[in-house]
Length: 430
Image (cartoon, rainbow, N blue to C red; front, side, top):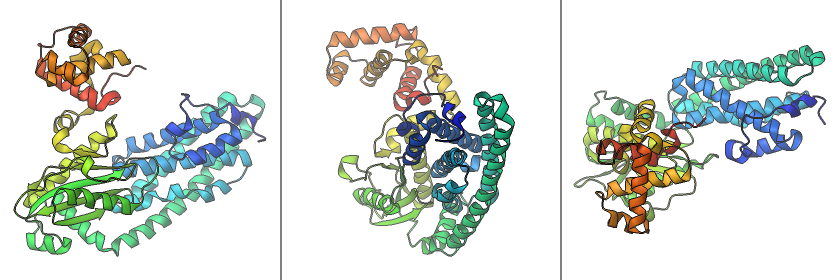
């Protein structure tokens, strides 16, 4: 039993199960067994708050897998800090491999160490603020000064240890990266993607890949809470490109949890296959661009795959294989997310509200518009009676406050955004 019983009073702002919110469920479970689910959930929430502060202040760390590593590292520190308070020891920080997985990701993206060091100080400031505020609420007044002093000393010690270890790991990862052949190929790719002039022959020679052909770009990443085996990501990229008829491939790991890849053909553009024809491992997701020719096609297809991956990470769905050609409208409409949310709320009115029944009305109205307002074809698609479709469409129009024929194009776009992106564009009910 801890001699700091006030720790048991800490609770998160919501009651979601740890398995739903934690990136380190085993570690969180160990702390829950020691202190109870409330303090463990509070620590997980603190880690998320630290990560949000960091990514809001340092845009360079927002990129896909980097942001996941920031969140994972922050959660590890928050759980470790609470464990250290329980036992009056810094020992938990010796067993935090998650804190040191971030440098490999940021080095591969060309992100400087100054951003990582700043992130540590932002995390420290956030943890100090949140932990001292919580302590002021739950610690008896007679113990408050001594406990707050101990908390402050502990957190400063954590910063010193993490700074030292992070700097050392960054230097090691950076040295390894510079000596790898991947570094030269990534430099060439980044020059192409940035639109810098580079002779075709030199680019092809550096990449070992003919950039004058037709290209299909794919991006593969980990869709689950735990890191995937990097080989799985590369094999998934190769499988998707092979199914598209590509004769040659270029596969580049971008950190440990993301792969950029291209496949090429000479006479005809590669054609992406559906998910049923490709075996994609669990928790791995793949986004494809549209095939294009030459350097411009190489660049454009990759950017399209990036937009498809962005939509996938916001979407409520979990399809393992996504094609930009199927998501182009949503990708364009969601480029400015605040504007997209305002657009959905403005066009749908009460039809953007919460609840399963309202979601059913939205879905039915979208299916109805998808089928050129045919009640019969919509009924066949939804496997319901024609009169049921007519009722739902009428009810959806009532919720919206105007008929489906008014601003029909905007209505259809808003319904598409709501269906594909869900809570990311629907009004908050908080």
